[in-house]
Length: 95
Image 1 (spheres, rainbow, N blue to C red):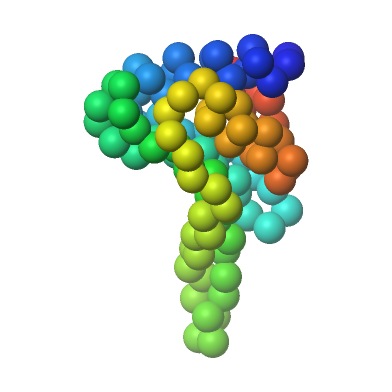
Image 2: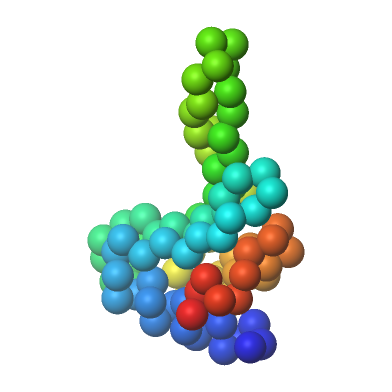
């Protein structure tokens, strides 16, 4: 599927579900696209990498690194998806 079609599909899902998350397991942890905000027309989308780390006591915890954040326009969502795919995200996780 090309980037434009993925962008349209992702935007439709993000527009209609304030809790929408796309995620893929990667070697370092997980890669996520998350929506924040409850307004259908004005929300933010972020690309985050969650990495499981072990502390000095041997306990595991997740550390979250924000890679990119943008608005909710189709062009901005396509840009986030492009970063997501470059970082190891899969098209299937958006479908």
